[in-house]
Length: 260
Length: 318
Image (cartoon, rainbow over all chains, first blue to last red; front, top):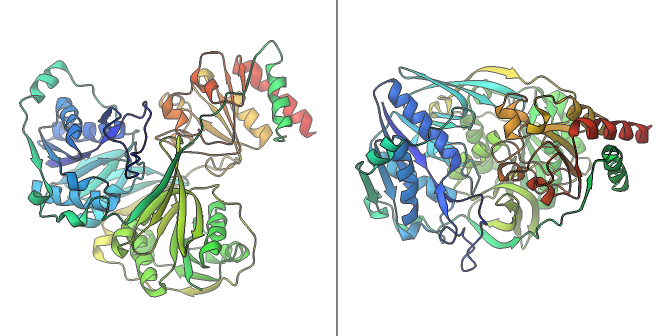
């Protein structure tokens, strides 16, 4: 089974993420980045499936130079090869354009049996790219999986929503996204880290994908960030230590705030 | 006046609060046309009329409801083509965002997700989003096509303004390609009698400090008529269902009051509640990062503080 896992290199959520004043895009340079935490679950799921049968896992990312680190991490976890689409013209792309680049890259990698993604990026947190990929590639959209089974070409997931848990079924080839409920991502072993150094990584530009630069990037985006503003940090209010009256004081605060 | 399509969020005709919020927002932008997909319209009609729906497009084919997301996107695309709306408003939950995503590509339109405000501005539509775990506020617009906007709960105060809710059944052609992910089973979540987490005005959450015993958290929540949330640690430990998880990979909530009990306040959790209007915490550890965010905090054991608070709340309510 050939599996392509799409991953994203994102600014570290523990750091002070911010925007570039010059063009209102996310600052992907000034802040340390890493493989998006939610994508680790997708990489892990791909590895488990490949290990259960016979399969090859290709990790794919679209991003600037540093995004190579995301590919590297996935290779260290055990992915077999990497593809990094890196082109300055992609800077400032919206989700629509990102999905276009990913879709063309997936086609160029060559008709995988399964495309796996995480449930959302930890920076944009839109959760739209997987559905867009399914739309563009004409693949069954089998998304937000908290449980996944693949038997032959039959794919089955459990998808937990607000009102209900659903079972979704389809057949390969398919696009599957996974939540953080699905597995426990492995830490790269020392052996995995050493082996990753020898694994092939291809770097592609827009030209390699037959995409005209005018179709992607900031100017091509169908949405625009008009302005951004940092929220003032919350001021710490009153802290009391419970001396047998903590609960009473809490209720007094709520009453003063008109919650009761 | 241009129509504004509003995708109705309902379960068998029981319309959820977010729909009344979206209809209210739709009235700012044009004439609200509700899009009701599935069965149970008779139960829903009154609620839709009450919040201003002038029209209701009814889509009842099993072809649309038996398959995941794709047919709903096709149905909406058909309506966008025929009605040329000023905007399409969709609830910003997992399914809603995926419908919006595919609709954006089909109609070559820009998409904005997790909007916390939507206003008419300069002849177009302006949105507000809270990003980077609530540390930044962004104003964004759609620059191409029909604005497709996924709106978070609690983004507008619903305004009861009677609309005609004139309904028409719409026949939708669903392509074979849209019928490739079949919903073969559905297990409804058991009703708890408590408000839904993302819609609630008050949320009381428990974390590692509960040690698995959520009874004090639940009692306090019930005294306030609140929803119950859980930290990722509590959910991972199997103490509470994932659908109650508040955090980056769970639900993001922005209620009037958020009470965190036995929750340290790691970034993963803060990303889910940082924009709440008032934040209160109870934790044994005075160094817990959650205390940096609070309007009021109690350093103490939730097993003594919460029951005492619960009694005081009940007494105050009489």
